[in-house]
Structures are given as C-alpha cells and as structure tokens.
Length: 440
Image (cartoon, rainbow, N blue to C red; front, side):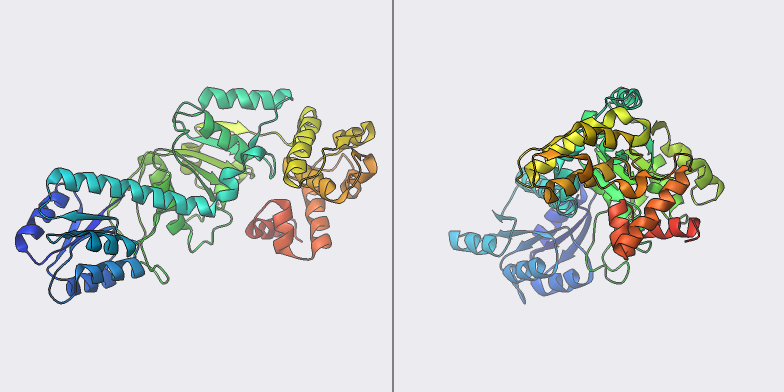
C-alpha cells in the first residue's frame, strides 16, 4: 500500500493543494519546489508515489520521472498545465503511471490514487508469485488422497475449521503432506480468493528472516537498497503458511508472537506499526513438547499457534493410501514427462504396500517419478521399485533409527549435504541438526 508521497511543483498553491489531499489520507508527504530537489530527495528516501509538474526550474518533471524509474520502484504521475498528445505519449513511454492536466479536482486525483494503490498491491503480489511459482501453481500435486480412516479424520477436521479464522498447527513427519493440508485449509476458507503466502522458515538465513517476515525500509541494513514488503504484509486478508516454524530463531519469536496475537508489527528500520488481517497456519516435523522443553520454541507462541491442532499420520500408518497415491503420481508424472500411462503389477503393489516409507508421501512421489523417467515398459514390476535398501530394516527399529538409516543411505549415495537435504525434503540446516542429534 502507498505510505510515502513526494509532491513536486514550483507553484506553492498547487503544492499546498496536493499536500492537503494526501495528508487527508494519513500519508507521509514530502514537498519539493523543483525537479533538482525532488531528485535529491529520491536519492535519500524511499517514496511509493511521486506526483510531479512537467515544467519547472532546474530539472523538469520528465527528468524526475526518468530518475525515479531508473533508481526506485515509485509510481510516478506527471501533472502539467501544458497538455499535449506528444507530452503524454513521451511520459508514458518513460514509465509514467498516469498523466493529468492541471487544474485537477480531488475526485480525479482520488481515482488515480486508488488505481495506483491497486497497481502497487498487484506488483508486490506478482513479485512474490515469481519467487513461489512452483508451490503456488503446481495444483496437480495438491490433491488430498484420503482412503485411510486416519486421513479421512484429518480431512473432516479441515472441512470443519476451514471457514473460521482460528490459527492451525499441522504436525507430522517430513514428507507427510503438511503443505497440501495447509493449501486445502486456505482453499476451503472464506479467504480463498485472497493471497496464500508461504514462508519456508528453515530455508531463510537467520540474518534475513525478520526482513522476510516483516519487510524492511530502504537503508535499514547493508544491501537494503529499496523498501521491501514482508510476507505478513503480502498475506493481508489471506493466509500465511509458516512452514517448519520451529526453525525460527528464538530471539525473533517474541516479535512473531506479537504479529500473531495483535496482527501488528513494524518493518525492519521503521517504528511505524502496520496492521494486517492474516490467518496463520504453521507446520513442524518436531515433537513440540520436546521443542518447548529444550527452549528452542516459546511455549506462549506454541499455544497461540496451536488453537486447532492437526496431526498428519506417516504413510506407514495409513497403508490404505499407498496404492491410490502411487496411481495418482503415476498419472501426474506420466503427463508431465510426456510418457504413456503405466500400470502396476500385482507384485509391485504388494511390494509398495509392505514398504515402511521413511520419507513418506514425498519419497513415494520421487520413486514413481524415477520409474516413469527410467523404465520403458507399460507395466511396473516389483523389480522396478528401488526399495531394497531400506525394506530389509527390522520392523522393531524405532522411528529415529529408521530416519537415521535413511539419512545415512542418502548421504552415502550423493556425498553432498545439499543434494541429500533436497532429496530428503528438508533444509541443510535441518539436516545438520539431525546429524548432530544422531551423533553422525
């Protein structure tokens, strides 16, 4: 949204008229009596919206426009008493948002201002969508398979709570489909037409996570060349997914608690509070009681997020879903890779159903995609399924031991923590923590 405005005009009456108009909207307004002063202000400060006269002493409005478009992300409106088609075309070619003739009424200015605000919201949302394009557009993979009693109960809960504003905490092992359930909650909610913004808390560097959440002002730290909106602001009126929320540094958690509880925060480098209306969905693959006891996660923040808890069972505890999921992935990956649709032999289905799937649904999807790409025949046989490394692990082993074996095998196969983490569906930081946990 527009917060800071720069008014540029050499006529005091016009400057005062525009100042009154923008301050009536509770905006922060700066004034410049010529183009040169405007350019100096643009060098020092961030502005969302610039309205400038065309003909002025020292530097013209066209020079202000060119500087602003080259060096800032401000919306620029040109205003002049000497209107011509040539001037209008020239200003629009240089990137002006609008071109108006003086004198202008409050109503005309208000219409342009409203369009500028809508445009700025779309620009910010599109910037985020480019970063998260795979997650947000790959809807084919977001289907919920619920043949097992356990997943049917999960889906019933989703349908019950989706239309409320209650915060939801989704817990489950890596690869169980926590993001898919979060997406369903948003899709079934009254906010479904509003933004659905995801933050992978484990993937954001600790030094940047506050800025990622809450945004920052220009010059607030090294590298902050322009103001940036945070994910909470982008999610306004919609839903924000805090994926692997226990990876958030403990020092940032009080500020997150306030944002969740009060729906209010400040950008990095600013003292101005920003209010939002956001629904929170958080996920974690950790034991939350242990996370609180180990003081890596605040108890008050956990209770605030955990208004509605949803536990996603691992795939080995919902075996009725294995074959339907495998057939779903078979169809999807056949289409994506332009391959003819294959079918599973009875022996292949039996082998899949008897496997423990330590990597859960994500592992199953990876296995099916690999088969689609590598195997030429129309039937998938038992010997095509690469499950032998872990299928022999004794059933008496604990979940931790199974995970340990899976991590070790993946590291041996790829000799790279980065590649191993990607295949395991976790961040490198989470992988390091697990290696430390298992004394590896």
